[in-house]
Image (cartoon, rainbow, N blue to C red; front, side):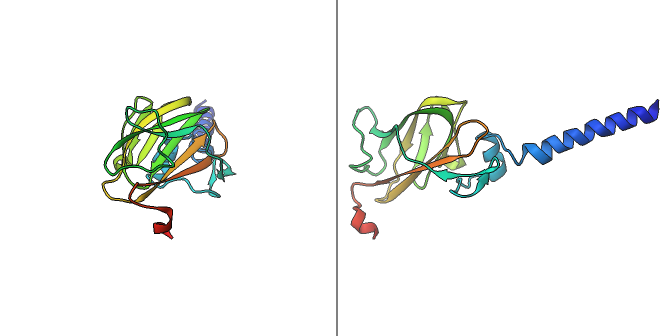
Length: 172
């Protein structure tokens, strides 16, 4: 009787360890487990997540609006230290949004991590608004939007925006 119990408990313990370390971590749940496993490192196109390579994706349904105004300033450029609403009206999924400079400061749709450089959506959403404070210096900023539609590959899009004091030629 004791040996039967030992063999069954060993079997279930083995199944638990396999599930936790053999499958669960390799096919990590996005986005909270991504944050737990990879920290503040943004996802990279080509890296393997959830068993598939992350791929570059078109950027649709994303606007950067000046706070309190409806205009999209992503082409016009931002003013240093001003607040802007990053608005996503996109496919329902989980999202991680990373900013190379500036900081995310508030959102009702998720949490802000990595000293303000990362926003993580709460639950699968099709509409997200997060406030981003532009950097104090004239610069260009990459805002990387990573979409994780369930237990599937990741789709990575990048929005490059310039401050009004920087032109595209300045960066060359």
